[in-house]
Length: 222
Length: 224
Image (cartoon, rainbow over all chains, first blue to last red; front, side):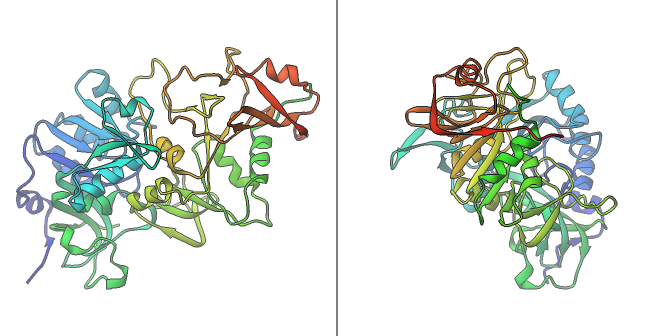
């Protein structure tokens, strides 16, 4: 019988084969909406090294991603908007040269992840053509317009925050807390979901992330 | 010269030009104000890059939800007919040419429509967000400038941007405190000019040659 529900956070992390030094971690969320805060904070306690984080923002205050950055486990971050109100930990570590940053236009970040999850190694996008974020990248002209080649992103582990989930791993999301979560769920070897409420069955028509993309889940309450 | 337009006056002027039924993305900051001035006889659907169509006004105090925010991370509401979607779909709407108008702020705009609005010299960590996708994908890109010239008196509308570009030749229209300008293949065309401001006075505040529409509309600041 398939049952992706875990009883404890410790079980969930211990059973994940892809959390290791040097791993690429994808974290859903936009601002404070839909951030897998508990998972990020639990990973901060594991003492891992040299992680690469992929996330739209770089955390704020001392919670969630900010706590993981504070732990010193992360050496590289791929982000569209790392600087924001309260992104103190990110700024400290970036300014101190402890964190390498790759800034990616937000839609390119989403599409690189989508492509990664869909088995597409690279694609051409009009975004960033003629700007410094396209420097060094292949440019091609299609139908009279210029496009920049971008590579897909795949992670070792995706961390997502969902509203409801059933034992098969089917997930729904709350309003704009959806954001990057469903895209990231598709793009990693292991996808760990913190879910506010487990339900017996997510109605099939309402499933946003089909369970095939999800490996384990933890109920975290509202 | 009469009083320059306030940011709200500029927002009201922009809102006048939004056609009924348009799907519109409002950038963070001043462009957000356009939402307050949408004409009641027209229905525009506001898109928020973080996965929302049908964005409504800020909720009543106490009714905010951390799950329902806009691109600026402020609490918002969702209107009837709205939809939530994930980021790849949101940017498919943007990049795929489904957004009718993207309204953005700017540091500099060039006469050929080049836009610089994401990076300033000396800024520490760069951050780009969705700006480059919006200017590459929206059918129309309109820029709002609260001031025609910067704090140092330097024009923000220039022949060539000196700041890092957000996108080349992407801006269609510029709304400022003194004028409305269209970017045309023949350069900048002024369609609206502040009451009491002469053509030469506006030209002195722009770093590129201007042409003036024959029936240039006069703009007036609100009394408030």
